[in-house]
Length: 271
Length: 267
Image 1 (cartoon, helix red, strand yellow):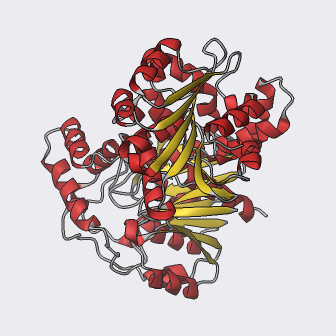
Image 2 (cartoon, rainbow over the protein chains, first blue to last red; image 1 turned 180 degrees about the horizontal axis):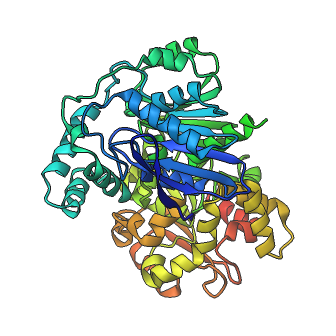
């Protein structure tokens, strides 16, 4: 087990909550960026599996976890700007980025503006309407209602366990807690944040080695085979790693295997 | 030959050998199909052997839960979908419990069972603390994703000079989903596993029960439990391997094969 230190790092206009596991002698640095309605703790199990000689950082995006709130006037590019500022402040010689879902376009965009040695994407948002073969949206709505209507976190967790007996014990805890920590503004449906991001441009311009961990749409992955083909055409630096046995949340469901894939890719990265 | 069975997009690794009537081999907790590599060399002359990696083990996929019932249902699906004829099953430890549960779910799928030291009542009898103590090192090592570090830790803790064996074990622990052990240690893996009910349902099936020496390290069945099992099962042969630990098929390989052949009527 690793002990993570949480600190506020102040960028231009916001305090970002960053968890870190850091030793001066370490040379490999990884920053993890979570998806929508999550927080840094989503990565904790995966981070625990990674070698002790990696420096690990995981951030709460603006509006999530313990980071500053968005209130209004929020754009997707704001998140990318925040992470770009954070990477500058951390000021590591080599930095690698991991992004899940919404975190995918964010880290990809940061790779263009900052010096990044490689990018790891996990079922990233690719700009199109997410594929929903399994009724994920409907299930998500139900989960959201349960959490929002419950009087306490405990009650929410209890209700979620009844709704999803197939979930591992830590999953409802993390989902309910992360949602309770999310800025109310971001919970409003339909979502109010503007899209000023050309997602296509972002993926096209990733300048470093990139691996896209691709979830299976039949199990809840958000991208179709055709979209993956398009991405591959867009940027030859992007490798595809298919996870036939996994849905949208690979790192949450298979933290050990996901950690192994990160190591495999990174060790390659360094030659 | 290495291969995979696919069930609901999830893959199950298996090794297939020989030809003849199908014999499925199920390894114990933290192990893999490789545990049978020596026994296979003899048995493949008489049977089609399908040595499987259980979910979360070896080269099979990881899953979100590891109840003993889940392991059984996986194999039931595999027999139903891919083997499609009655089978013999050899199971060691967890694999033996899984084999009995498979037989309880689908008795028609089973020709006979060979159960090697099944911990049918063990966890309940010894309690969580003892189970944790037994698996503590393996749990710790399964959380390391550096195969070489696992290997180094194993040979440091064990004086036995058997590098090949520790290589296999480090490979197994590298592949293992630590949650397999966590769920068994905290007891949630046993939800839906009712040994008395299972025994009642399989009481007509031809069964060979091979029991390790409870005084030796790791034996998991005590005499009293064997007596109880004898009373329920009507078509049972029991063999006690004295002075032998839990890994009977490794410790007493030749004798084990001989007894298997006798039981399966292989001359």
